[in-house]
Length: 321
Image (cartoon, rainbow, N blue to C red):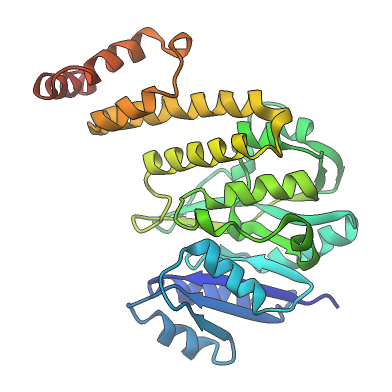
């Protein structure tokens, strides 16, 4: 029986961690070990965890070092054949691990399996699952072969991931041996909202990925989420894309990446304009070529270049209209 290690980074997770732990303990395929890596909690998280799973590995970082560092520490302190990632506020359905283990049996060449999920907005479950939001023909384009509700993705799938990204850390499980090829999480991105995107790019480049279509995870969305701010998340994606563009490993997809930098920059510009962050708008404009600017964006761009009092007055008027 293959052993499964669970890695849970923590930072002031007292509000939701009990429910998260309960979802791990109720897995129909039992996990072998859970490693909690605390990045400086001050809200009693450790007390709750130790009361619920007294024999679990609980590691405290020497200083607040970011989620990538915590994941790497947790991985290094475990030994299971598979590593399953879980954020402190998300919930696994009981068959989540069992169905991923089965996926690895179906596709022995796969090193990385993720599942579908649903968002849990303030304890209300979304009607649609994540995969349902994919563009038309997305899954037929990205899938090489399918068996029941499990598909093996084409390699590489980077163009599709750039268009629509269906992978969330709490849905991911991978073979430990994969890291000898891909490397660990890049700790330079530990404070980025989209830190997992760079890791996904590497996994796609160097190993085979499979997907389980059944939604087996509930991803919480709430005010305390690190990724709750759409503008910050989009700007984080742009920084990751620029890094990947300059990395050299993905040169065959430079056009795709450049396009997505522009697409995301337009989205970020519009979000920043709505909130009145005109200085941020000016910075973002540098990544939007003139030919991509429609009339509305050109007007907004002109407003951001005006003297502050008048520009802010116009911005408020345009936003209210």
